[in-house]
Length: 441
Image 1 (tube, rainbow, N blue to C red):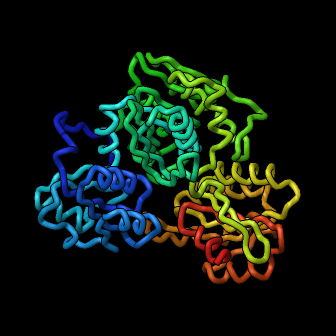
Image 2 (cartoon, rainbow, N blue to C red; image 1 turned 135 degrees about the vertical axis):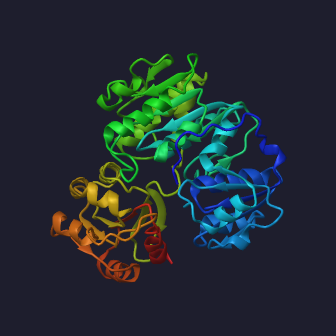
Image 3 (spheres, helix red, strand yellow; image 1 turned 135 degrees about the horizontal axis):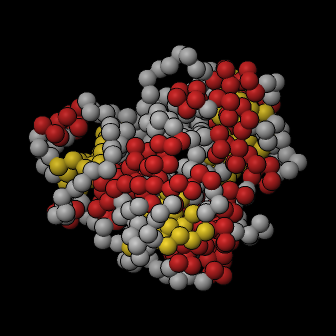
């Protein structure tokens, strides 16, 4: 569904809606808003294509969850429908809600409404925004600022035993992950904006890099004159974005330290930490206090997450990386952490379009892995495209790569070929994490 910037009526008050239905409630962003509404005592229902860990958690919190989309899920008492930007115009629940005249708001529009009344820290960027958002949240929580947080993953346990994609705070700050897909982030009202980096992605929507840069330019222009943009001023891809802005610009590389003490590995995470420290500094948090919080930062769900050790002594990690830059950064960090271990990656490509357009970049992204095991492409929102398949990637990577038809086949291979102290990383934005979880069982 097209989701360019939408102008909402200024008088929309979320407090007046009591019965809210969510389309795509299992999505990491939409589910955060569902959690928020549950905590506010509202009646929440929602549907998704299948049950998941997220939908099960929401059910335990009191939400009514439907598996699959059906017009009968839109009950007569529903007064607001919130939908993911991935929902299609002909979705039966979306059609039914429109026919009944029920108010429908997209997930980005909801974020826009929340951010209007807060000092909003909006974290954007092609890579690193989830971890960076979580790091900022950790710093602000530990410093007692009681932020409200929406992050595109789950914060892992910290000093407050938090494990959620939503934090309800009483303070003035709203820390939110701002996604560029379909220009969704243009609905947000940032006081402080972050751009971690800009890269070629979401090319099923954007025409090219210049088109992506234009979206980030529009995002940066939302920051008011008294606001702040935090970015890497030396990044060539940001030059056209930051040119002519009225707000203050702060270079996060001024806060970067090559030997920074953080619990997550890799140069990309040290840059994420520099961003978080810069944000804290702008908001009056001492750099030493921020560094202390980041030492205790546990990472986030599905971002090089340590899942445990199998009975045979194999260490299992899981990562959401699905773009060549992310894959490479994660594996460089893994090699930094485990210089002498055998690293095996089970990779599930995400989207036919991304795999096809970035095939050459994917080939080079696995240099730090000893073995690369490819699963079929996870189609997600796209129709089948027989012109691209995982076997093409295997052929170009070479001898250290193999392809498998399903989870069962790759799990059997892993059981027979991994040895004690080997490192296994499941990687991709689909459901590849289940491979590691099955081995740990």
